[in-house]
Image (cartoon, rainbow, N blue to C red; front, side, top):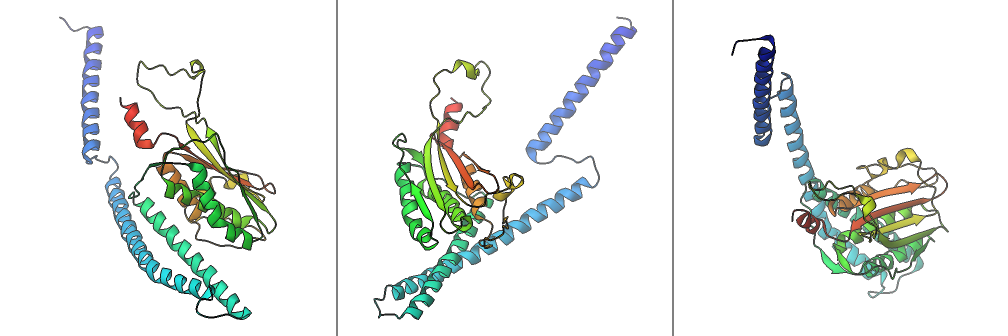
Length: 317
């Protein structure tokens, strides 16, 4: 066929399209093999520096985690001896001795909590956290956390309330990790709620309407789903503290972030809420805070009734 402006344009367009498709396929193959080439000459150097920083971070993180782990055993022994002395089984104590040993115990527990926070953060940061799901009662789980924290709240003259919710049935979740998240939220509330204040722990069934991408041909019109059932559990910790300004509602969950407020001591490592966020995300959930200055805080997190790995298996069927 003789060349005309029309068929020449078609031929050129077809050639450009074919070359572009080949280039795109090469790029995808390079990405898949981890050998993507940078157009910018300085990009390769930046990539190398990025890898070096990652390796240095992992080495530092592992070294600090190892040191923190080595401190756990001697600290546990010291705390055990302090508790033994405090029980007065080795002899009666006078008032001054009780006061000193009480300070020793509270500071030992504080240091132990710092170490546990850092170890949890280290495991989550390196992606080595494993989930152990078991069918359990969330009411019993939260009640046990309240029992463990009641002495701390009594010492600070704070009221802690938890009322079991009969609408919650047993489901599969990682009990120790949920207890850790709730403990971190209760600790945060105890630090920032003034003496004489109140903290509430509450759980309820929740419909988490996640906009999940569905396979082609599967109906995805939410309006046609008339009978929506709860698919998750929402756990909340509310307090009568000073509240958090709106500009810090996301930042409070950052690593090592500590919000300084007048009249409240600056305690902790800044990892409590960050660890809670990472644990909730690992369990396939979501965490957030609702607060206004002077109106207290309400920290909430939701976790699916169906474990994350089971939900993925059903989605692939």
